[in-house]
Amino acid sequence: MSKIRIQKLGDQVVRIIGARVVGDEYGENRPLPTENEISQEFGVSRTVAREVMSMLGSLGVISISQGRRVTLRPATAWDYLNPLLLEFHSPEDVRRILGDLHDVRLLLEPEIAARAAERITLDRIASMQSALSAMKQYERDPERFLEHDVAFHMELVWACENVVLGRIVQSSRGLLAASRRVTQLIPGGLQTANVGHEKILEAVVAGDPAEARRAMREHLEFASKVWMEEEIPIELGVSGNGDSP
Image (tube, rainbow, N blue to C red; front, side, top):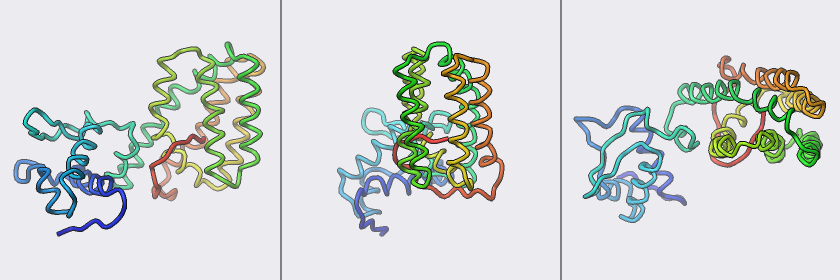
């Protein structure tokens, strides 16, 4: 029997079963486990086993119908915005998924910066200046840096005055944090990021959409090499909230 003797048993079991799903261990010859089978294999209560199935369902990995019949859903239905899903995958797959996220950023964020340059208010500018000052202070403290980078980037989003856009970005923050903890591994990455932040802020303050767009794209393209160069390792704890370049 595979015993789990640490806190948050459900989270640990979800990771094990999720990795099996990604590894194609379940199918016609091996159906998904029942709550009773999970309880027996891992030595957890039926309540924990039920939580495991519920978490897999919330991630879109499985479908639970009436009578608690469980079926596996296609990978296209999985919630890739949830960073927990990354922990089911190999480092190579994580690199691909986070590379896809970075591609989305390249599509969206330059336009967000350009729109913000047209609509930013003095209060939001002050908040961005404060965030940038804090990021410079914490260039040797990645987690604190993330905290203030959240504020900097979110001020650009809120300046666009689009509640749907705000919700999209907010719902992606966990995955964005996972991505950006990897980009922090680039030597001198936080210092270089702050140079980019300064250029973005200058363009926004000047009310120059074209320059804000260009500065944001340049800022993001610096991090692009993470997803193309395999020497940058993909070994990260993906849980948590935050934002960084």
